[in-house]
Length: 425
Image 1 (cartoon, rainbow, N blue to C red):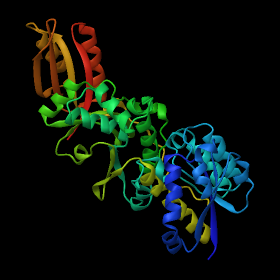
Image 2: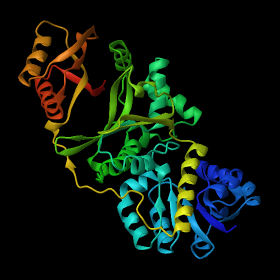
Image 3: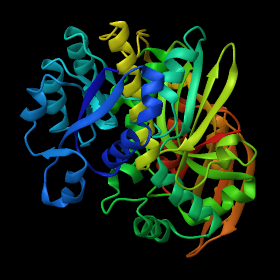
């Protein structure tokens, strides 16, 4: 049986998982593809750090060993980050190597250029593992929804923030306490900025938007809010209202455009996403024909992510046999403008502080009435220093109305709006 040689750049958590799976599941890979698969060379930064692995596979610090090796036809990039990963993949594609990557940051920001380079060199560039780790969501959207019109894709696509919010809800911890525990368990990096500020999830929503709607949305155009300002009292009040707070990424058609956002949201406790806890991920896809479908699983981790990488590798192997390499992972393309704020409508949870004195609530309701906005639930709690905390769930209103309300409250000077979170029923 013919053997296909594999190269890899990076040997961290995911790379180690790929090595393990290639070795453990060699027989099944051969049965599925009709070819043997062998990992020949791995590029690492520090040979001494990976000395134990050197008994299993050839290690090097020189990328040229892969670039100039005619036996290596497929290369896995799992080094992470945008640079030098972009330059590495560019060199690999130029050398006519098929590339499989888990690099969401790179695909979200520089993917268009790399996809075109892959096409020009008749190479595959696959990146299933870049979104939601072990959940095979991208290929499912590309293939199983090929004939359906997707109207919305939303989900919990960052395990770090989901773990933190789960602990805040279940253990009644502050954000700082939950973050510290996440770091102790290895669910959060020493510098968690990309996760807790929502940037990691925004990268993933860019990729999901392209697959679902055919439109590449710039990362800067994704309305992004993290969880670092989520207060324990809002988590508690959400529960009292019958909701749980999750960091939710959403991309949906609104009016004639596309709306993409990553932000904390109040999710009804009976909604499937409310049951997605700790480091797990879930993506819900709504199609005109199929309705709502939910894809749930581990969003990170060495072996779950490596499984998605191996799925891409076997796809490349099959394409090599059929001589169909060089086609884009996602062929759907459609130009959609970003949705107008007046077309994006949701219910919102608002938390404010007002002077605890007669007439202040009336000012709030008057401002809402001016905008034709109203609320379905309201709770007032006594605060400190003569301030009352008011929590509201509104009826449906547009993003434009919300912005006007925020401006009106700021103009009052006596009211302070602490948060405005979308409500998902």
